[in-house]
Every structure is written in structure tokens, then in C-alpha cells.
Amino acid sequence: MSDGKLAFQALQLANEQRNAYGLRYNDFARYRKHCGNRTHRLRSTLKMTHGKGKEFKKLPSLTTDSIKEGHLQFLLFEAERAWAHSQDLVGQSLLPANEGHAGTLRHSATGRFRRAVHWSTQLLSRCQSLYASSRLRASSLIQATVYTLVLNGRFLRYREDFEDALIQLSVARSLLDELAERAETSRDQALATLFADEIGPEIRYCAHELGREKAYDVDAIVRDLAGRHQGDIVEGYDKLVKTFREERAGAGGAHDKKRLEMLVWEGQPVPVRNPELVDVLLKVQEAEGKISVPRHGGDTGNGKGKKKGLVSKKGVAAYDGVLLALSDAEEVARKLMEAQQNTGTLSAAAGGTRDIQFVHAYTVYQLLSRRIQRDLVLVSTLLSSQTPRVQGAPKTKEKIDARLYPAVVKLLETVVQSLTQMRNLSIVDESPDLASAIDARVTYTRARRCLFLAQCYATTKKYGEAMALIQHTTLHVRETRSVLGSLAGLSTPADTSYPVGTALVDELDSALSAAAVETKNEWFAYNGGTLDGDTKTYKKPLFFDIGFNYVQLDMDRLLERAGKAPAKEEREVPPGKSRLEEVMRPETPESAAPAKGGLSSLLGGWWGRT
Image 1 (cartoon, helix red, strand yellow):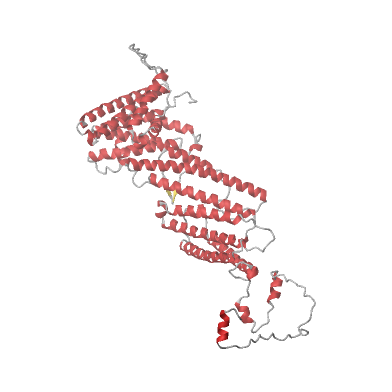
Image 2 (cartoon, one colour):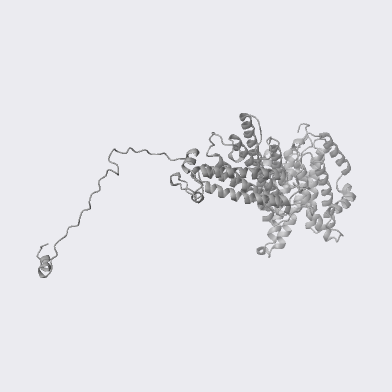
């Protein structure tokens, strides 16, 4: 460190190694092997070998000035190796196949557990000597003390010495609460909270075995026992805690960037009790600070085209960074949840607090909400590039890109998919108001999608399909109004991520009416409103034929004024006689053959005579 003190964090190192090498899934054999390999490398690095072959070289005694951080890590990994071996032996003794020699396995496990306590005691002794010589910070000594107390308390609980185990674990819990309360960073706070959650059930179990009243109230038990025995268990407890508080007060706000802002869901804090999750959420917090565009995806901005395009590109890039960080956070939360489910362990958090399943659902909700905001920003960018037809503006000669409306429809489809996934989350099902708010946004987005899909058909002269979609859009608008009416005056988390109010629905309804009128006019001008899209097969509507009984209407003149009159083909008639001058020719009389009868006429046909 910059002040010359050793940067040894026992709890942090143990937690990182356990999660990385098997203990996330209770694979003690793998973790034991890793600790063995690590101790062998540390022996070689620190030159702590006893020579080669049969020649034995005694190691020189270590002084306080010659102790390095590697020596402390070596003692920690030796303790972890012996502890993992004992837990592996305990697991093997519970298998039915090892029922015959289960006692031998438990006896071996007890010996390895005792060896782990021995190594941890040596570690604490080294740390105390370093702290006395001002080579170790008070926080590092507290972590080494907590590690030793937790290991010793678990060994006493395994030996069914519940009273001493309860005292050891209670003092360790009080030190962990002190570390969490005055932590420099959110990661340190989550680390202390994680170890406190792990030993909480063990304190409750020991209190239950001792027959204490209110054994479920862990905090009350810790306050009672730690206050009476902390001076006896930890040497110089009050002075150590005072020095630790002074160190934290002197640090000030040097680590404000590593502080995670409180996450709130419906007025209640979201607990983040894992250091890995804190790391990824800090990246999310940093990425969210770069978002400079509004959250609502409507048409925004009145500046020039170049400036608006530049802001839109920066906004989309900022959202991509947030989505990447949230994806990492979701993956970490999912792995933690799966590990808890696979190992069959329940949440060690205090009663009434939210567990890792809730944190995972909350992370997924944030990921989907940011994805929706990014898609709405893209929709706004596309619509601002060209004047949309759905705004009811008068027709211009500017031709709209045929790829515009299909791209908008595709983006709105992804928004609908994200909203549907959000609706299926457990935290949404538990809140009826939020579920209704998301349903309203689903119908509103579907209405916008149908409207732009109708414009896609209108640009291809399929006015019948466009009108059918516009009529279907009115159903979604009506359903959206109904749901929003039931949520009047209520505030939900969906209001900040995807605001949809009565004003937006009214604007969509007016745009829908304008699009319907415009589509009808174009359809009538195209082929008179028939389903057949070919103008050559145009037929006058039936009501015109009925109207001809009363009014003389020049339909050809109307078509000519509309610019849809068919071109007249003028053919030159060759000069000739008129019809009056034509001479009526007499009809050609039929030939009258002489009638012959008798036998001669019958036989004449046989002999070839006609």
C-alpha cells in the first residue's frame, strides 16, 4: 500500500477463492486440491522448502520485519485446505456406501478440522504482531480475527459445544456488523454482509440447542452475548474498534466512486449481499451516468438535423453500454441463484429481506426496461429523419423511404416482446398495479405497431388491408384508455421507464383518425374504393347507378378532374359510304333439289350416285 502497510484481506481472499474453485457448488474436493497447489507455489516463491532428497533443512524463524503478505496467504490457504478436507470427509461419512466406516471418517474429519483451527490461530498471531508494529491496518486485523472466530466457532459447534460456539460466533457477528457499517466501498460492505448471513443460521441453531427463548432473533442474541464477552474473546477489542473507526473517518470520501447507490423497488431497498454482484452493478451505475437522452421514446428535439443525429447516435451508444453492463449483472445474479438452488440451501438473509431470486428478477426488469428505452430512441430517430404520414400533416411531394415503416414496425415488435417478458416476471405478478400498467403499455405499443403497419400497406396501394389494421388499432386504443383509467392517480415503476399517459393516447387517437381519412381519400382516388387494386377494372359504385334515376352525374368528368381518366384512343375511320347509301342485297335463296323417291333413290346411294 501507499503507507507501507500490508494489504492483506483475509475474508476477501477466502471468498474469492471459494467462489472460483468449487465451493459455489459445495465441491470441497476441488477446493482442497486448489488450496494444496496454491500452498506449494507459495512455498517455492517464499523459499520455504526443506531441501531436496533426504537432506532436511530447517527453516529460519520469521521475524516481524521479514514477514511478507505471501506468508499470511500461506497460513490462510493451509487453514482453508484443512477445513475443506474435513468438510469433504464429513460428506463422505453421510453416504450409505460408507456406513461401515463412518466413525473413522468422522474421526479423521475432526482431526483435520482441529488442524484448520491451528493454522488460523497462527495466522491471527502473525497479524497481531504486524499490527503492533504498525505494519497492518486495523481492518485487516479485524478480518483475520473474524476468520479465526468463525472457524473456531464452527469447530465447537461440530463438537456439540454449543455454548462456547454461540459466544465465538456472536463476537464474530458483532465485528462483521462493524465492518459493514463503516465500509469504505460497497464491495467491502457486501463482503461483511455475506459472511454475517452465513453464520446467522449457525447462531440460531446453537441458541435453539441451548433452549434459549426467541432463538430466531439473531440480532438480540448477538447484542447480548457480544457485549458481555467481546473483551474476553478478542484482546483489546475496544481499542481495536476505536482505531478502525478513526481509519475510516480519515479516509473520508476517497472511495465515493466505488459506492453503489441504494436500489429501491416500490419504496423498499433492494439488498445487494454479494461482492460479485456489487462489482457488476457499479459498472451499470457508471454506464447509466452517460445517458444524456430523454427516457421517453417520443419525437423529441427541435434542433438542426446534424445536431439531432449526433445526439441520437450518442444516446443509442450510451444505452448499448448500459445494456452490456446489465447483461453481465443478470448473468452473475442468475449464476448465484442457480448455485443456491443446486446446493439445496435456503437464503441466509434475515427474515423479511429479499433474497437472490428477487435481486435476479429486479435485474432482469431493469435490463428489459433499458432495452425498451433504447428501442424507443431508435424509433424516434427514424421518425425524425422523415416527415411521418401519421401526424395528419398535408401531403407533400417528398417521397418517404419505403424502408422506414417496416423498420419502425420491427422495433415496436421488439418492444412488445420485452414488455411481454417483463409481464411474466415474479416481481410484476406480485404487484397488481404494476401488472396493469405494463398491460396498458403493451396495448399502446401494439396500437402504434398496427398504425405503422397500416402505413406499410398504404404505401403499396393495399388500402383494404390498411383500413382493416386501422380499425383494429382503435380496439387497442380503447383498451389502453380503459386500463389507464383504472390507474388514475397511482404511481408505478413503469412510469419512469416507459411513460404513457392520457395525452399520448389522445395524440395517437388523433393521428389514427387522420390516417384513416387520408387512407380513405387515397383509396377512393386510386380505384374508387374497391378491393381490386387494378384501375383498369374500375366499375362505378352501385349508389351512382341508383342516383342516375334522379340526377345526371358526369362520372367521366369527375375522373378527369381527379386525374384518373383513362386515355381516349382516336381511330381514323376510312372514307366510305354511309349507312344510308348502302344497298340492301337480296338474301341468297337455298338450292331446291328435285325430290326423288322409290327404289332408285335408295339404291343410288349405294352405287355412288347423288
